[in-house]
Length: 325
Image 1 (spheres, rainbow, N blue to C red):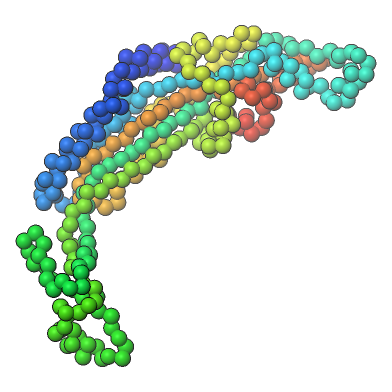
Image 2 (image 1 turned 135 degrees about the vertical axis):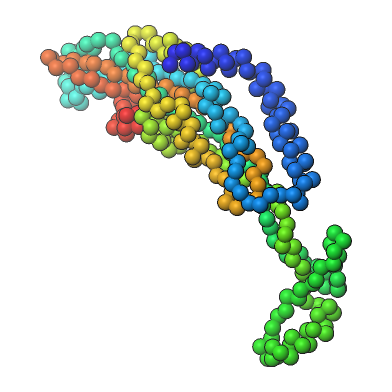
């Protein structure tokens, strides 16, 4: 992980200026606009419907090597505070009252320095968008006084939206309308049935997953990451004075994570003539290390482990431990 993290960070520094220029100029967007403009000039040459769009993939989301990972850690509480929380939690209420009255403290000691488990979770954000051509049918209403329409050099028949009245026989009504249709005050329209539409489809999404592969809800993410977060560039920065740090490896690979995200965010159109662009962009990929402090305290002959939420300073409950399993 050290080598991967260092390589990712060096690549990111080298590309920082390029990223800034990309945001200003957005050459991908400009190229897409030019392409769409030229394609619309040939809109009458659209090929029959098919679903070939693998060669139109743009954006960094299709290739995991192009997605830069950033690492963060949630700043843990001090180890002195963690030990105080652990020892206080092990004392029974009756023992505290007795100690307060007798003016002595129960013999409770920390067996060894606390251990901090840095447990990773993943966070991915991004979007998918595509431009495509599809067939469409349009109903065009005209004004009441119009008796004929010429569109692009061709005359179009007007159709009356007739309101049949129950007290007039259908045969008589149709014969009558034959003579007065163009003078009728009822609405008139014509139909364009061979239109080609340029449409766009866009979806944004976010995925948060524990290192074990469990999906986390927004509330669960907030519980774990709402404390002090710090960007890190090497796992050596996870060391904390007065403790032994252990780094848990994620059982979910970067490749598997991004594939899961693709399945969540990519929604191709159900009906189209041709896909013009198919862009998947990962805007954020974070590995966030959550600190869990384990304090081994002993009263008598039997040592007991107390687990503390290294972010909030509270005792770790079952729900928190389940999130990080």
